[in-house]
Length: 283
Ligand code: NDP
Image (cartoon, rainbow, N blue to C red; front, side, top):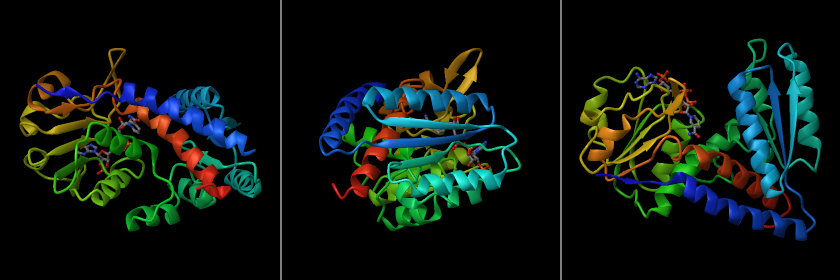
């Protein structure tokens, strides 16, 4: 029977550490500031933006949300990014995704100064990530690695299988796991014989967004199972993993909620602090 990888508890511990890091930055006369550009009325985005704001306030990080109308032009968004790039008080900048259809998300993200790219989504920072020379990490992937580290789960030589190849979760996590010497496979919607591959995983991560798609017969006995998925079913949050039967087979497993989710917002704040320190030569 698998033990729980408690992301909520780790997030709480990390929160205390981050609070004192912000206080020590302020002693150096430095205040971290995160700017979030949210375009349009996507309800999920509003929830994410509000939760970041709450966390930032709690830690003493200044967060400014630029809430732009759904019909904002790309040109105006680019101008705003240029002005925030040029503002020395802004340590971190992100554009909440998705953006409305008249805006090209790639062009907008590429405009962010990599030194302020807190989501690690600019091509320069993604390149650095795959070269193992990164100064910022995508929050969800960083949170997963921290959770594995916290429970002393070594990745060296392990078969890590990640289901999902998005730029925000699957791909960056693969880069970080490779850095930890895992043998990494990334699966996706075109992968054939998914279960044959997931059954080989010592560490199985699912980041798809399909409720309970990972069944017990897709999991190796003793595997570590990380469930990134967040799905709303009958008013409840469930993950991509069929939790109760998979827990019987796993050695460790993350719950949903209370697993990866709480770490994501905490790690976003950690990245804000990292960028701020770097910009002020405090590393
Ligand atoms: P995306 O929709 O960007 O990516 C989903 C991935 O799943 C794609 O690579 C897709 O393949 C793959 N996929 C879809 N269907 C299947 C299938 N049947 N078999 C195998 N692979 C499949 O999602 P995100 O990465 O943004 O998010 C994934 C989930 O994680 C969501 O539930 C999201 O809410 C959650 N999430 C949770 C976070 C947290 O903090 N806990 C943070 C970020 C996301 P293809 O590329 O071929 O289309």
